[in-house]
Image (cartoon, rainbow, N blue to C red; front, top):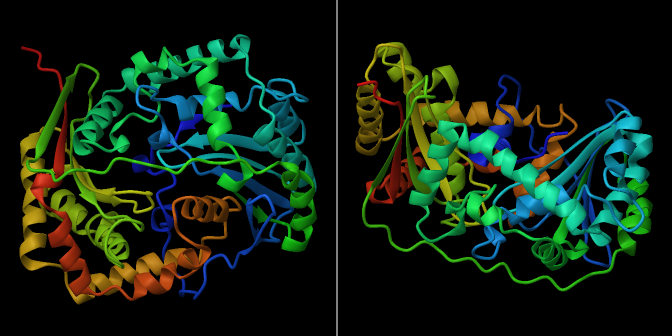
Length: 451
């Protein structure tokens, strides 16, 4: 089984709009209609009933991620994610994974800047078994040098294969380090190699004991199950895990940024040049009310597929780009990012694509978006919410990411209505506020010159 850090800007867990890009049906007022309760030890449990198939998705979210690591210990959150599969006082290393496989299920785990998650999709009559093992490793992880140090080699190899051998990933690391001058969002999730090599068993145990507690977790269960069926199981297994003191999440914030930055990476491995322009942006939790929703609508206008401004201009009309678009998440605990990107057609100079992207930004800031563009974008985004429950894992992903980054169930359920309330005036105002070149990084990926 593969366990990779969640590179959220690449499309993993980037909020409801990014997860549900399907169009064409009437809008519903609510999204998941979840039910929830909280155990005496502080663990929140959320249930979304879906009787379409006799399966469940069981997902445990911890309110800790790479941005919560101590200075000098980058990669520790992801390292601990790996180590949670190494056994407890009663379960052998790998036993949980073997049980899931024997019962026809599948599993994975992920680490982001703000959270760490573990999930299984399995027959609904196996839910109690999943809860028993997850509750066990929530409280009783056993780590020794014999299991920790070989796994450290595994994450180092993962870094080599996913980052050191991938120019695009290398450039992404450097660009984030330039964009976030002071905040830990600028530190690699998987970790800097020289710091990863120094991680110890004691580091992992200390991190686990500090953050892995029921009162610092959310369990979301979606599928063929009801709240009344889940409650006694949760009380039996998770309810037996004692509450622990959890530290406050203290993070340095960004200073005033005074100048745009540019990062250029050239490599013989590059076959397709690319450029992106990223800006610091508000999230649901940082910024004025409504700004994140306006940015989601704006991203749909600019980069929402083949009908978007950037695609029509750079790819269809000008014929400069093979791909062009924009991306915005918004589900960060702290600041987020808004990114424009493009990649040239064969034989086209990358400078022309950059100039075309900047021309579109200038046009946006000068002329704004129209009411018609906003209405069409809102309709596409809202229609997507109708399909949110088609996949049994989507409710767990969306609700979990929201709840561990400061949002509420009502925030998620109200998402279609809040998108519907966005106006062109709001979109234009937030565009003028966010697209300040002094708060931006331009990233350029090029083949290495041959002469």
